[in-house]
Image (cartoon, rainbow, N blue to C red; front, side):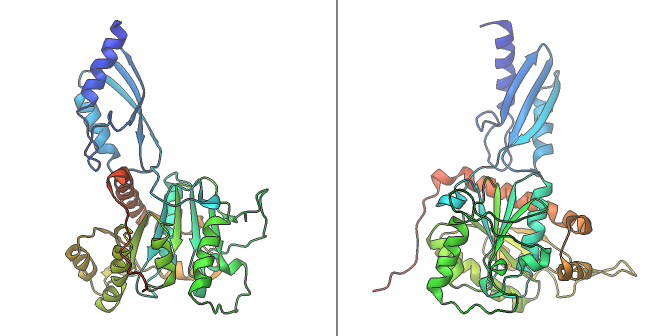
Length: 358
């Protein structure tokens, strides 16, 4: 073994002392250390993380520098999002993760949170799409001001419109604005599969699935057919909303869909005059109920009247930059927990707990 190889081996051994705080394994065994170069006391390496904007990035880098005391260290950050356990067919064959954004309760802002999460993930460097599965009340295109000219690829798959770098599909693109959708369960199930399989989503790190309220056919289809690999619960703070919102957790538990945690929407309001933080619908109840059932509280989002006004005419990223800032920490925490979940896929059996009809 040459001196250079010996020096590299010494550095690798030191790096084995650095552990990912979530995955609980060392960064060498996890394959996070790439392109390691050691020239005397100069160490250059790429740190390949599993989620964009990893909230523990600085902690890991600090541990690297500490363990390589005496060396001059240069670390380049890159990432490769881990894939979830999904049934991938045609359109979603290159999608790494599909995250359901849902609630047992209507009116808590699932679509707004879906849009903000998509923008936040995009800002962190991820490839993102939104699939609007609220067929009875499809609103994503109107909230974004997104239009659609239907095109298909060579395989006959629909090419989704791209709004400011985010791919979108919604039933609102295909029906008149005021037309109602009168579908029973089988039609909803087919529509879910069509939006997953007959749309060319291409390569995406995260596909955000905006769900309808409740615990009906759409979330059941997603869980039974293994079309999503995780879910996030949305609620406003008041007990009347939280107690209904939590019903979706029970649904996903029976379907064996992991719930990453809860996001409290319209949690507070900042008075434009006094700058006082006003909790319009109370506080703490949602996070307390999540703690009771062992789910993490991912973060709170403010009530922003200007966002409602923008959604009426079409949201543009440049107009909501300050609002996206509020959800960036939530997006980081969410992707971190999803990476931890995906790293355990081989250890987590998949089963369904849905009683069969006799």
